Structure formats: structure tokens, C-alpha cells
Length: 356
Image (tube, rainbow, N blue to C red; front, side, top):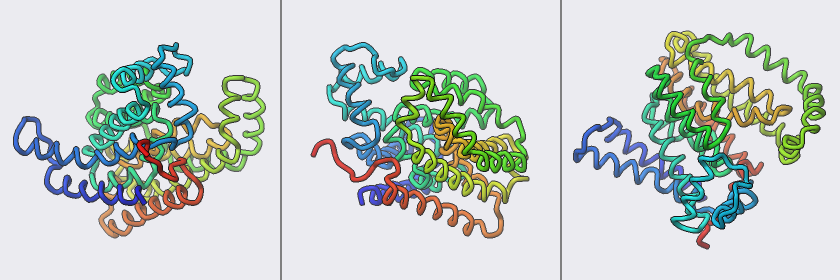
């Protein structure tokens, strides 16, 4: 119930923000103060619910809470955190020696960056709703290090749109200090420069799905011989990976519906080509996750860009635009709701406040 109330509240305030304060303000004026206040009250409940949770997510207690106290007691970086995140945790522990403060700071960074990124969307309100509907908000409870990077990658969309390679490389390069998967985002910048043939992509995807049992056997046999990755493999069971693969495939296919309807228009601009290619990449990665668990890590980046691609593609649909858009939003909302309630996606239920 708390999540439904949160979504309703956030979308309602986002509607007010879009209607009255969507224009950016570069100077300190009455308008800019009102705009900042509206933005603040829009994001603060999502930050509180994420930051003040307790024991919610796969790694909350075993990884992050445990590591927080080790870092608080000046233990070496035995958790294996990247240097940037290690020092962020250490700084938080010096300010308030409670794990909830660290989780709240991380939630604030992630959510504020996401919502600042939504200002670049063709439809701000749709992107806000999709943030919850595709599960990005709930998944950010789990891989908190990587989701800081995903949020920065979303914010860096403005540099992709404006072809500002220097700023993009700089900001994503620094993110490697937070989570090493950020290195995968560097080549993604050039997706706006290439054309990916959808027929070839679909053929490859189908081929992977048909051969996945043989590929899976070979992969498990190989990876199990490497201690570091064998542990990762054991943490992610075959059933989990197949479940993630199927949900990822469905999410990618839903996003491709409006993209395929407007393929010609999207291919005419760098921005459209980038978003179109990201959705095709998401489809290919989803097909690989059942036998290649690390594809899941890269999928975090492609899945979040559904938030941009759906409103962008729907903007080109002249006839039945609302039908297509509402269909896509409804499918995502229904899929994520069923997954959370009945399949324990993201491990966010039942909700528990840290203060109680």
C-alpha cells in the first residue's frame, strides 16, 4: 500500500511541476525558488521510503549494513567496494554513525539525478510514471552502488543529445570509482552514430533463445572453475536467471512496440537512433541473462532508458498515440505489480521502516 500511495503522490506533484515549472531557471528568481520547492516536495517521499527502509533488498544486511560498521570501525576495504563508494560510506559514517543515513544519502543522490534527467524527456510526467512502472525505483533498493551510476548515466543523456563527448566521458569515467560497470557506458555514447538492423537483432535474439540450454551448460562448466565468479553464480540460481531473462525480454519487447512503429522517424536523428539502439541492445541482453548473469548488470542501463525511449517514440505517433502510450504504460505497471506482489521481484515486500 505504501508504494501505491507513493506513486500516486509523486505523479500528482509531477503533474503540477510539469504544468507550472517545467521551464528551467538559470537565475535566482521567485519562479526558480518555487520551482526548486516543487521539485523538492516531489522527490522527498521517494527518498524517505528508500532511505529509511530496513532489511529490504537482497544485500541490505549481509553486504551494506555489515560493510558500513566495518568501515565505521576503520577496517580496511574488505567489502571490495570501489574507492569512490568506500569513501562515500566512510564520510556518511563520520556524520551519523547509522546505516540508515548512508542509505538515505545514496537514495537522495540516485533519485534526484533521475528526476533531473526526466527534465530532458519528451514527456516529463510519463517518464516519472515509468520510473516506477519499469521497476527502476524498486530495483535501486538492491544494487545501490550501481544505481548511482545508472542515475548519472540517465543525467548524462543531456550530453548525448548535445554531442558533448568530453563532459560525457568525464562524468561517466568518474563513475568507475563508484561501480566498475560504468566502463560499459563509455562505448554506449557512440550508439547514436550507428544503425542496428532490427531484423539481424531479432534473428540473433531468437538464435540465442533456441540454443540457450547448450550455451548455458558450456558457460556454467567454464565459469564454475573461476572461484570469484563461481560464488556469483551460486548467489544467482538458474531459476532466478531464467525469471530475470523472461521479465527482461517482456520489458524489452514492450518498449520496442512504439519504437518499431516509428522506426523511420527515430532513425533520422542522433537522439532517436541512440534510444532505438538501446532498446535493441536491451532485447539482446535479456536473451543472454539466463546463461550470462553479468548481462543483467548491463541491462540496468538499457532498462532505465525505456523511461526516455517510450515517450520519445510515442511523440511521433499521430494516430492512436494515446492508445499506444496507455497500452505500454499499463503493460509495464501490470507486469511490475504482479512481479512484486506474487513473484517477490526486487525483494521490497513487506515494507519495514528502520525507525520501528
